[in-house]
Length: 227
Image: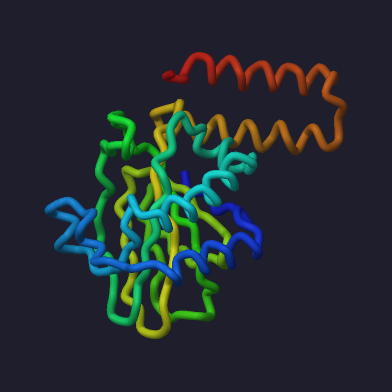
């Protein structure tokens, strides 16, 4: 399931995150890649343990917490602290699948990467190339969203970032361990939640159909959730 979410960050938050990153030191992105991914990866990153990454990451985490679409689509149990990357002219990331297990910094805890997220921090007209290519059951999806918008998709997906030919593409990326491991089950729950929210705009919450659908959603979540 691929879900594009508009305006996760406000324009003011995008500007603040960009200001923090612009004042930071960038390093070779290969330092955080596994052996196989390092061959395919050519970009820059903010060190994950730097004050800048933590400050900018806190802004992103607060935005995730208040966004009902992200929480409905990902059903997050754990979220890895957001990281930040940059693709300048000639940089790219060839097709790869994200690592399945991630260590949470400073917590001595590992988490399963179920849902990948890319938060765009650069407007599409500021660069050429740099599309996020995601291969799923419906074929290849090309994603290039406005600054402040985010896309979430299964971490099992083969994906790539096409070469930059003009400008620079900045983004935040991170992984979530979902309460519901199976992507197909998450997709059904998301579709059901979207339908319930739409029905509630025309029917009162005590309507029998609304109550029945809401009960069905929670009973499915109760059956499938792993805590």
